[in-house]
Image (cartoon, rainbow, N blue to C red; front, side, top):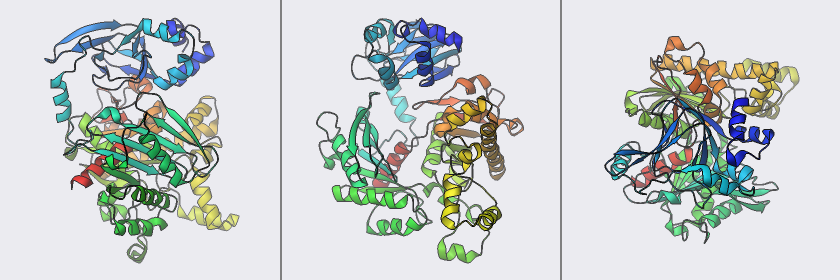
Length: 565
């Protein structure tokens, strides 16, 4: 750390920062590693960040329409690359490649603006030393564009038979997340969230796509007003991307529970609304809010098709022996008591994205996808089909989570109820909101705080970390047995993307099963944006990847599929 701080203190735009400010900058940024010839910046990708080389050498390379390459610049430790603050961030017109094994710091644009951009002279200092990502001829290779289009075999690039403008809505109890995708002009893509719905301090945080964010204070609002705020910002005369709601091709809604009926996205009609309402008893904390957003959207846009994409849908092709509980069969027949699984939108995306990155057909691969966040689950994806997953009738079953217990002996619950005179509501609160790593550690449900506590010698924080990883490792071993082998394993969501410690602990002892990590890459690699990090060592028989999940993009993809059908 001291060497990194010394290096950064010599970079002109950072010279006036104190040691504490530099440490805060590092914590707010990502340290990444690139192997020789590895791609650091891909041509044609938006680049709302500032990069600083910490070790090794990077080269900035321009390609023409014939794909011939020429070096624009060689970057050494202390050199910066990105886009100086001269307005809207644009797509990179060059590539940045690693010449040797290199380590570099990735500073998000909004972090730079908040911590450094407001200082006098910072813009001039940055512009004088930062290597820009503009190509000398400011052209893009047509051959590369054609190759990129041909590689989108799973539609994750949101290709459609005709240009489409898709609004994605993910409505929860206290928040409403949204994404807007323009398949004809990707510069129009937008995202944001309305936070603190139903309580004081409600606000909309809108990201225009240039690395900045716009915040609108809304006060105390309900879900209807939150939806109207989203519409207002998308149609705003200055920052909007549509003239009015009639420009929208379709609206995709995340619906948590689809029961046994829905395995695919479906265009919403009165029957679908009735079925989602009937399923509220299986997801009382989620489906009612999903349904409220659907009704509001249908009222505002009666002529625009609405599509439901179900979080349980991907798991509906599990075999019966994987989803049945060993209860009297009448409970399944009469009440639908079975394992449904959740995070299916994410698990489906991760499997397809992994296959695409490896240039393999998903139908040829056995994949384990690990969605690790405050809510965590793992899925066995056998040749494109979910054949088992850790969550069950509710999201409580399976892995240890932020505040949920995960798997527990049902007898333990009966014993606690009898011994402590606990009712159903108390048990529900205990298992869903007071357990998990929060309950074990007594510190927090935030893994960053758990890991900090473990590093400082807190034995309960360390115990919580080990219990979490032990449970995950057991599921991985079980799913290798279920599929008869493994080709690819994917870590994703906040913990999977950001925690080298969790990934390392989880994979310890799995070398006999073909899983081995490259320690240095695991330690410094962070899967930001649309990057995919290969964590596996050269000896590993299993490809181990880390990537960000993208449920918004997957919902848009499924919406397009439903509308095309």
